[in-house]
Length: 177
Ligand code: CUA
Image 1 (cartoon, rainbow, N blue to C red):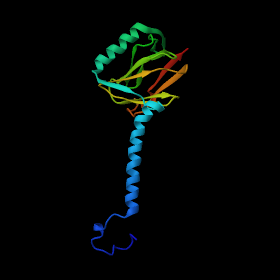
Image 2: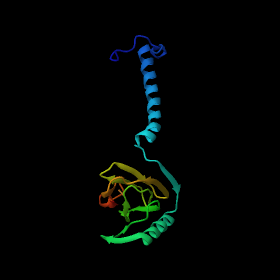
Image 3: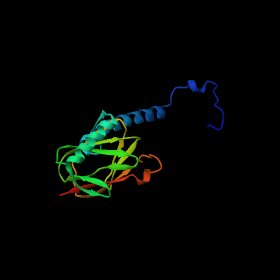
Image 4: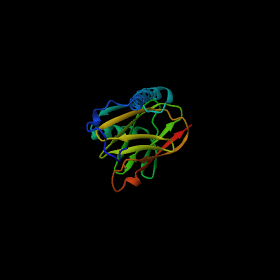
């Protein structure tokens, strides 16, 4: 018992007991299996998002985002442009203190290359009510190919604490039939 001092002075020189060896082996093999599952779920479970990441200057990113918005804005909503880009194109969402810009209107069942980047600090892209979470870094262009499968109105909340206005950093995304 650990309450008593060990009887042998060189207690740590004892050979490892069999049950302990068994548990170390089990834990190691389980770790390996779970490592394999990460890759397996990526393909079979469709649980992990495949993304690409590139270095980008925030000013360049902003220029690209504004070019897309300038070309495909269909209306305004609460001071934000609602942008309906053609399927298959690259769309750029800007994260900044404390706003998601612009509002996209996507078509159900179509592919889009969604770019995410921050203009200032780190933000978190969380699509509600579905469970999609991505970190948004300044200086990096994160690209995910998305295919919206349900029409409706989605919320985008920031789930990375980014200062005093963090809780007001709420965006919107439309998926239409
Ligand atoms: Cu942006 Cu929290």
